[in-house]
Each structure stands twice: as C-alpha cells, then as structure tokens.
Image (cartoon, rainbow, N blue to C red; front, side, top):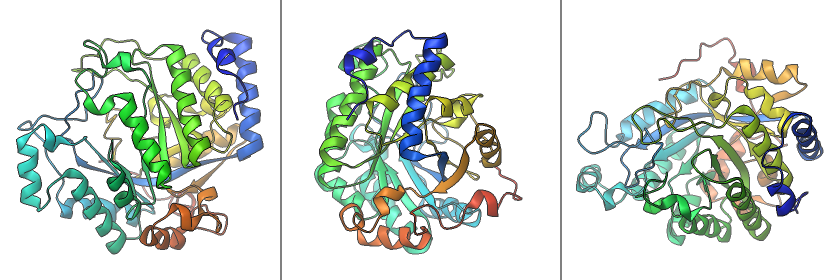
Length: 390
C-alpha cells in the first residue's frame, strides 16, 4: 500500500531544499488524489478527566503528583459544565484525555475514585461518556491509554472514536535517561496491542508519532509502518498525527532541541507516502506558528480545535482561531470544513454497523450530513462569537 519502500523512506532522513520541495509535492499529490482540496477539523471540548498518571514521561507537564495543587479528578458536574459550554458554541466532540491508570500507583487516586463511586479510572471515563451521550448532543472521543479487550469493547459502546498515540516503536526510549523511562504504559508493544485490540473490535482509532523525543529517523519510519500494517489488517485507523515535541520548563527534557520546520515537513511528506492514502494525516496547528505549511507536505486535517478549552497537554500553546486557520488555508487553495469525531468514510451506510455502538451512532447521525461531514459548519455559523480558552 505504501508509495515508497522502507529503504527509500530511510534514505530521506536529511533531504532539504529543492529535494524536500519535490518530496512535499509528491506527498501533496497523493493527498489531493484521496482527499481533494478540503482540509478538515473537529470542533471539540477538551475534558481532562484526571491529571494523575502512573507514567513519568520526560516531556510531560500534564501529569501531576497527588497532593500538588490542581491534582485529581474532575467531578461529574465539572465534566458536564465543560461539555455544555462547548455545546453552546457549536462543538460536537468531547475529547476525554487523562493520565494512565493512576490508581495502580497512587493510593490517593484509588481513594478519589472510591469517593466518586468507581473502582477504576476507565470505569469513570465510561460513566462520563454515557452521561455526555444521554445529556448533551456531543459525541465522546476517548484517549484512555492502553486498554484490554474488554475495555476496548466498553469504550466502543459509549464513544464515536478513540485514540492512543503510539509515539514511537522504539523500546530503546524506555531505558534510564530516555523519554519513556519509568513509563510502563509507553512500552511500544503495549500500545500496539491496544491498537490491535481496537482493530479486532472495529473501533475507529486515532494514533500517531511524537517526533523529537530521542528517536532515530529509522525508528520514525518503522513506527509509521507498524501503524500502516495494522490498518491494512483491520481498516480501523482513521487518522495518524505527526506531532512535534515542544520543550517545557521544569521537565527532564526542558533543554532538548525541538524539531524544526524542515523536520516536520519531511516527516509529514514521508508519512503521507508510507501510509495507506485513506488514512487521514493530521498535524496540530498550535505547535508551530507557520502551521499552514503543513498543507504543502500532504496533510488533510488539523485535528480537534476548541473555542472553549485550552490544549491541556500543551497549555502554553493556544489554539489558533478557527477563522484564522480557514483564512490561511484559503490562501493555499484549501477550504476548511468541519468533520465529526468519526470520519466520513466510517459513517457510510455500509460501515456504520461494524464501527459504532448503538448510542454513539444515534448521536453521530444527528450531527452528520449525508456526506458524513458535520451538519452545521460551526466556524461559519458562529464566527461572530469570541473564542475564549480556559
């Protein structure tokens, strides 16, 4: 399914200048043939259900230790308050993001869950997704980390899609001094198993790679190929994100070099040539000032963007206003269109019974046009509203 071989991809590690421009043109041609000149985004609210986590990633500022200010779980009332504010501003996706299995490391997390009436974080996530489906018009997307087969099936029953970033296939980065040391849930095989279990359950998935955390170029290529292989087997990977590492003060990787624009463009173009063309290629617009250049390297999606909530994983990087993304996209010949948390190809009549549980499907159907995109294009209907992130 790949346009280029692994060997060809590995040889592109240092391509620059005119050669990089040609590579990007090639990738953009693949994108145009499969996705046209529309670039999509999902209007979402970010629900950081808990910032407690048992992993200690070297670049993370999201996770907090028990007892530190702000550490803990959102209450059900706080969850619904966030979601309803998003609903009022035309959001259609509720993205649940959280630390991984904190109750297995921190007794305080287990106590907090017990006070809320739950035994585990995944139990609480699923209960909150049910409430979102029952009490609002938004559709949950769940980033709950590694899951066992039963948990995958439970998520599918209450979510329109789910996600887990592979980040890297490199087991080397779990060694002492590396980005994923003391991170049991970042062992690559565990994340690949979750993606495989999602494939077996036909749960639409987002995944991707995080570049600049110490991986080699060859490890990037192998990470993309591992994702591609899973999609060829199961057909369940909706989108692949290429995300650039940003150094954050106070973390062990605070002084590490960040990928530059050429590195992002090179990686995006190669990703487009390696991945099956039906997989959406996404890059976040808030992690680089000149994000519109990603379009020249073959992306077709800017991911979830919120008019309500900040990117709690990268809180120092505010989302660009949707109108600004639309304007910059238009200067390059693209029209920004709003999608749902489930991509249009997954919402076609021949696929819906396979990929969605009954309740998420009802919610998605209420929000989808015949072509599977969002029924009401919120960036057009609500462009006069001031977008404020909290």
